[in-house]
Image 1: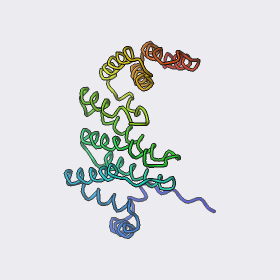
Image 2: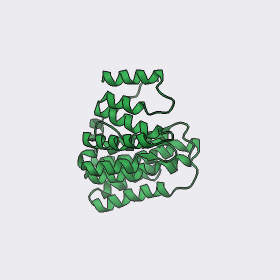
Image 3: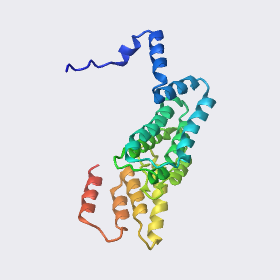
Image 4: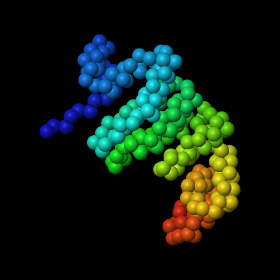
Amino acid sequence: MPKKQQITLENIKSISHDDLAELVYGQMDDQNTLYDKVEKLLLRGDPKALLKSIKKDIASIRRGRKFIGYHEAFEFAQQVGNIVDDIVLMIDDCKVASGLLKELILTDSKVYLRSDDSSGFIQQSYARAEDAWAECLHALSDDEIYTDILEMLVCEGFGIRALFSEYVPKRVLEKIYAEFIEKVTHKGEDTFDEIQVLQNCAHYLKQPELYIKATEYQSGGLHEHDYLNFAKEYAM
């Protein structure tokens, strides 16, 4: 079979507005995603209505109770991904966008508990939400970022969320490291999650000595792979 010609954005822009409108309108009844996208675009001129619509979509996921089977996971992941797209592409205020992404991210634990995400599609969509949230941090104060990270830090039953990145200010990383190193110093039981937080902070602070200090608190002592990780930290 001959290879299909790649359709570019410029190709689409060359189509007349009326023809494109008729095409979209004709497909909307059969394409729920397309219908939702057009609905959001129509609301873009009314920020309050757009915000309300996105919040409604997030609430629908938060209230969900039905089990999501393996074969339904991809479609559900698309639903989560579509919300991320709506926030990133249509919400102009980055601070508002960060709040919406935070609301969405906080639905993940209950979704994981009621789904068979063996394929990892749902997790990938939530990872996109986390990445998008990180890119909004320039609109938040250090105190707001610190508060948000601590509130979102633990995905109940599934460990630490991937919230640390180069976008997190140094002062916030230092504050979290200081708080958590004190916790592991005085804690008797297993401190796996806390050590992971400390390692992440040290990594993005680019301070290998802090990474090593945190790792030394892990139960069972140091292992061969730890020394390899130390070398990687120094090589950054």
